[in-house]
Amino acid sequence: MNRTQTQNEVTYGAVVRAAFKARGLPVEWGMAIAWVESGGTFDPGLINMTGGDLARGGSYGLVQMSLRTAKDLGYTGAGLDLCKPEVCTALAAELFVRNKKDLETANVLADFSRLAAAYNCGTHHVIEATIPDSTLKYVTLAVSHMEHYAVQYGSENVCAAPIVVEAQSETLTSQIEPDDFLGVV
Image (cartoon, rainbow, N blue to C red):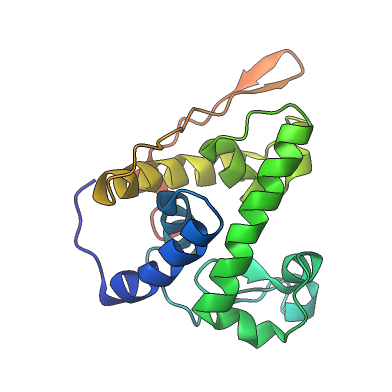
């Protein structure tokens, strides 16, 4: 993947990298999630209203943090404050740390692909191997961008592995190409 960074990616990417580095996480993980969640725009002002009501599932900022998830992490501020890059990226990094702990407690490998899936649909789906098809597409795109950022930032912590989900004696895998999902949040 060879592409030019936008000004938002340069400016807010530094905030993402600082938040993930501060929590002891590979910076490429945060960059990949921010890229996917923002549709590649790195726009901190993004607000996604689910069902027309932010209180019931909307998400905010360049990592599309929901107010409910933020509150589960101990956040006490207002929803619109989640559009502040320093706030939402710190919470996203904290969610990665919590999800990693939850997966490891359940004896599930906590690599990037599984953590990206947990970020998208919740750890219970990863632990129970009930990952929705939309999340498999999300993970495919996230892994592609994580690998790009790992090269860009020189990290050797590339630990992506394809997600294989066993369900009713069938193996479900995603056959989508990362470019098929570009710009879809």
